[in-house]
Image 1: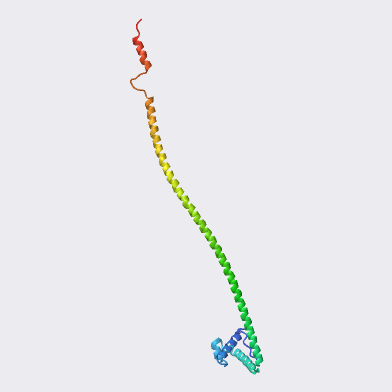
Image 2: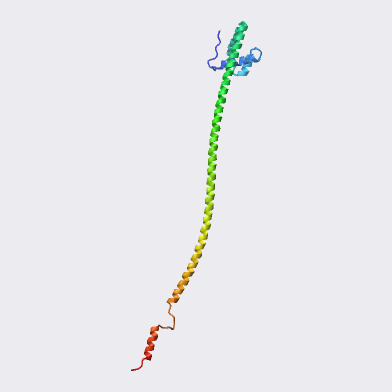
Length: 206
């Protein structure tokens, strides 16, 4: 009679039970685990575990019986299997080596491209640094010229101030001289007035 798991049991519960049973068998020299061992490993209840464990263990026993009933593999088949395995391994190694070589080639191309980009960037940096040095020299020269012009401007300002002072002095002197020239001298009349007086006093009576 076939044992059916409860309807509310997880669909993958039997897979978990089978995995636990096979692991226990491989670790314990072919012996099957007890229900309590499985229960301690998987948890749950004995009511749910018991029918599933029974079905799984029965299936594994049938597999072991079928494998035990198989005749021993002939040497020719064993040799062919070994050669096939060796050929498969060789092909896998060749594929792996080919992929590794392709990756190395790709990495080499990437590194070469990166080196070329780096060289281009270094050239750009060198050009920028050279241009920066040129601009610095120009700025230094312009600054020196500005300082020279400032010194000349200060000298010119001083000279202009001195000339303005001299000009003011000469203007004041000129104004003073003009005032002296235009002002009449006290106690002195004109020549015409003196002559007319002389004529009146010296004319003989008729």
